[in-house]
Length: 473
Ligand SMILES: [Zn+2]
Image 1 (cartoon, rainbow, N blue to C red):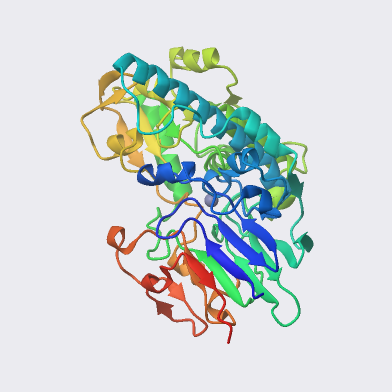
Image 2 (tube, rainbow, N blue to C red):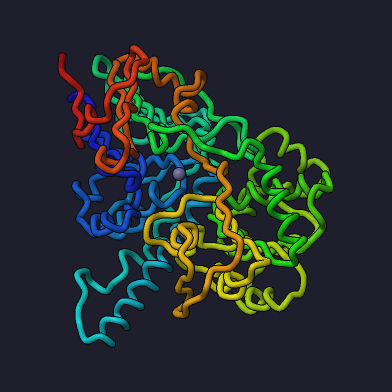
């Protein structure tokens, strides 16, 4: 039987990445992501399209929840296979899946209380999508494998991973599927990272393949970034210190936080910013930073060198990791200027909300966004210039300086996706590349974003089908 690939998510939208590869009775998933767009979240509750117990293995490109977040649900529903990924992805995924389970449990409990108070029932069950127990049950299935090593993941399906430069431990997944005659190579890009960025190595090159499935979150645009990101950061920090305010940075726990800390360490060493207290007020970001420190082999060469003196590239005088909520609350009693890096990155929850209540109405303070703010989030409301916003149940006038610093994106843009060296996308042998993680045409400008063997762009409309079967001819 010729290999088949089913696109089970991230088709006409940007989350829920999941592909089912089948050949001669073997079934392997590449990624098992959660839908995160508000209007699509109900899909997370759908039964899996095939019985989870019949899936032999998962190959995980990276740990972001939109690529890994439904693993605990799959395990609860009967999946017993192995989960192949790099050691760093395994460690970070475990942290993120447990956190995701906690959020699911807290959300369900909150909804139940609210519905009881209001005397009504909601459209969805007031139970968590999955629990901490389900997340912990998935831990034992992880089977770490380093870049460049072939692994047999199921009968007739072999996999090898290559660094994709997106987040620590991320991978392009190359599968060799089928037997002699019907054997095909398929590369799944996962999320594609950036070139010439600090901390992580550049994306590598898994070479040409028969078929390539590539993400295109920013495939129809170029990043509009600060020309000199470090200079912009210096200006924001120094001007805030001059005014005597605090700098709040709502940040994502993986990558963005480590990037910021590394840049600040450098700027401090170059004496471009003053010595001051910088609080990393996110337990999850702190744990993930430890994974970075445990895996220098995945970092950029110049970052690796910083380990040689016995120190860490993610530590500097004045950096304080906040472990408990009491210490977090006491930060705002400090007189003088401090930097506070806290989650959630879109201000949808976490400790940043508490810091916003004490800083958002202070004209001398700055709130600096370093990531995308989705529609409907508190971060987006602040960024859109709302004169007042609701935080933790109270309204606050927005008087702080609001800044969005562009340039921290971990996704390749159009030119970077096409840059020579990464996976030979325009040289796909079959001419049948496929696009993933793209929003539907009606929500995004209808620019072309699929490349074939001739290297020319085709309309994304050509890849609308959710199921692809190799032509028999
Ligand atoms: Zn990602």
